[in-house]
Each structure stands twice: as structure tokens, then as C-alpha cells.
Amino acid sequence: MKIRKIKYSDIDQVRIILTNSFSPRYNKPFLRKDFSDTKNITLVAETEGSVVAVASLYIIEKLTRKMGLIEDVAVDPKLRGKGVGKKLIKNLIKYSVKENCDKVSLSSSEKNVPFYEKIGFQVNELQMILRNN
Image (cartoon, rainbow, N blue to C red; front, side, top):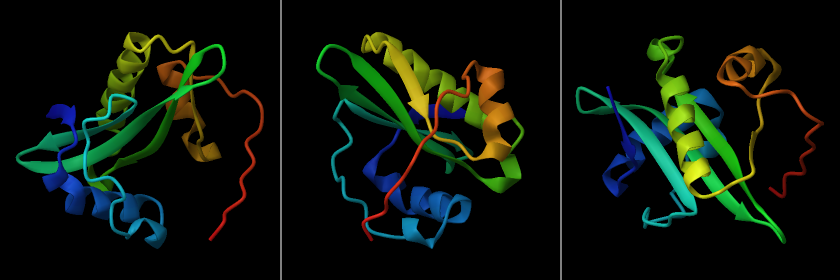
């Protein structure tokens, strides 16, 4: 298995993984056409020429510090529990260190909390959401 940055040619496979992992809301055209921005890093796991997982890190520059936000971690259901997601997350954490982020946060469903705790994340505070559409 190879962990690498996303390429534009991956978007159809990534869209399927996101839609299957989360909801039909992800079955939309990609807003980004250029994946070279170092503040928005999306990694994929590839095996035998197919993308099987995806995860993104967004570097947020606040007033006095930087933080990383991990989003859209999705793994093909056939490969869950095999360490694919863990490899993606650990690679994104390395990027956050390289970018001098003082913390990395993510949102998770309750059922996935044990997975993230094994990597070193801790439950902290409460997240709230307002969807505009």
C-alpha cells in the first residue's frame, strides 16, 4: 500500500469512497482542481492502482498560532480495521508538525472515538454544527 498526495485523476474514486463512508451529500463535483496548496493536504491510500482511502488536513492560521484540522477520513469498507486509516492520520500529523501547528483536531462519531484514541487523540470539548444547505 502506498500513501501519497491526491491527484486530480483520483477524484472519481475518492468521491465514491466519501459517498459510501458518509452520505450522498459527498456525491458532488470537487471544488478544488489544484491540489498543490500546502495549507490543504489530502492524502490517499492506493493499493494495486486503486484509491482505497482518503483523509485531509487543513492548516488554519489563527491570530497567534496555527492548528491542523483533519477532515473526511474515509476507508473502503473492505479494508477497515487493517491500519489504512491509521497510516493516513499519522502521515497528516507529520505534516502538521512540519507546518508548526500547535494542535490537531478532528470531529468523530462516538463509535470511532476508540480508533482515534489509539492514535493519541483525546476527547476534548463539544462540537456543534449548523448546515447552510
